[in-house]
Image 1: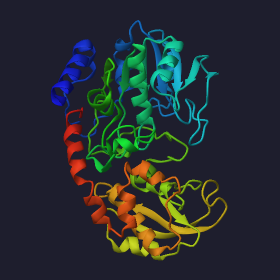
Image 2 (image 1 turned 90 degrees about the vertical axis):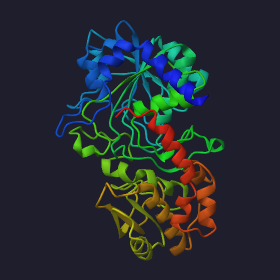
Image 3 (image 1 turned 30 degrees about the vertical axis):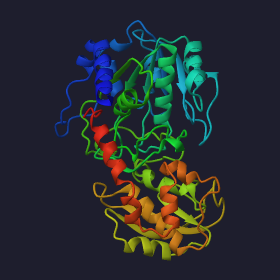
Image 4 (image 1 turned 135 degrees about the vertical axis):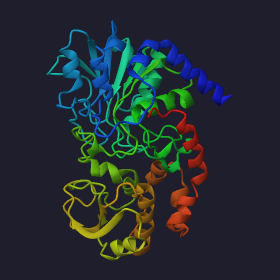
Length: 415
């Protein structure tokens, strides 16, 4: 029944938007070497905004919604008479990006365009549907750069907005962007539904290996009770094996603590340290690449290096965060140095660092709210590490669920 339901949903979407899909979503093919990448927005604009013709449009975006010459798509669309842009919807950190983690900008009028900006952060279901209704939009467009990790909240903003658009009777258009850490494979544990939060609404892998348009198709086909009328505007020139620096696109930090594409590369593994009493590097120039705590010394880096994990070396490091954990205190720890991105396994590496930290530092502790369980998607990683399991034992524990997710994932890939 699930296979037939997925087929029905995909067919219904294709039928409803046949002209758009044929024009903007050609059959997946490998990009020619050196072929310039065109984002979903690039292709939408080149097609004269055909999928938005006659619609009152609202855009869900943030500072990453930019063109190759770093103009924001809202500014571009607002100035184009072919688009009837009437509202903007801001996620965590806000539309213009003025808020830190766990914050948003609230409701205001954008000084640059005069457009009303509505806050979507921590809104879902009917409450978010009411926001779309109040904004007076017919079509909701999503264009935000993701970083490839289940607990990065923008993909759940996507999910919540799709669900709300369905409730409000709106169309939904996703403008695709690259997965900056490549789309080679899915890795890590799969969320258990009883641990669902805003850092993981549905059972996908910790490093999902998908683009936002592919995730939108997955959400529509697998998880939404009432699928939304969905159009995905694909990229051209993207290959799944490529990392961000191959695209020639500017890197705009998707959030204040995601300053570079190198940060995104390690994030799906080292963000797990948010669930511990160690610093995950917030308040430094290398968040998620620097990890540490007061009292940690060189034994941790040495223990991690002895594991000979693929694609990465570990260096003893000392740093003083300017905010967040250990603010103003010089602490010891490790810095990750990824030397082979294709071989590097971020989730396995994150688990190995948790295991070794607990073994070499007597002060190691999980956060009292067991945030680690929300990040990993179950209590399994925590309980296995507490029981003395090594890295391979922990990784082996999620393989059957990961295999099942990979099979489902393949049905929704566009490239």
